[in-house]
Length: 194
Image (cartoon, rainbow, N blue to C red; front, side, top):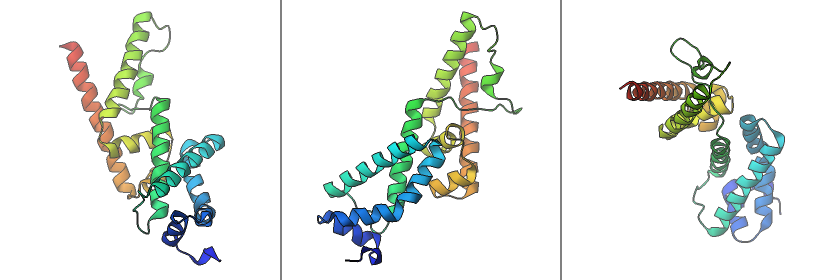
């Protein structure tokens, strides 16, 4: 049986009906592209392999449970699963993103890190916590671009490719995300001053 002539949809059907070779061929066909997209985000070979395996465990579980219904769109579906796992990883890691003020300065660098008093440290820690909470309040598309740009250090072209939008859309989402964060920061500052 030459599976290379089968399309993805037929291979999925083959696997769902109990033929493991269907999944093997799908893996052979798409592993490189899926793994590379994960690696570009996390920039760590072992972590990328872990996330790749987690993605395929989800794929297998979904296929076996009969919940797969992405007719003819196997690769984009798996890429979305992998991409969501990467975003979850960065959320769990809670790495602090770079947020620039209107004059181009990194907001965190403007906080004084030298000779920090206990109060300064508490204020900085609170600001980091506040910022993480604010990021969670952003609409999903804005949050996603912000996480990919600042946590994963991806270019806007890479973000556009991974999220399946134009570069202009990715840039626009980033602009809105930063604008929304600045508004939230201003509101918070006014709350402290008031």
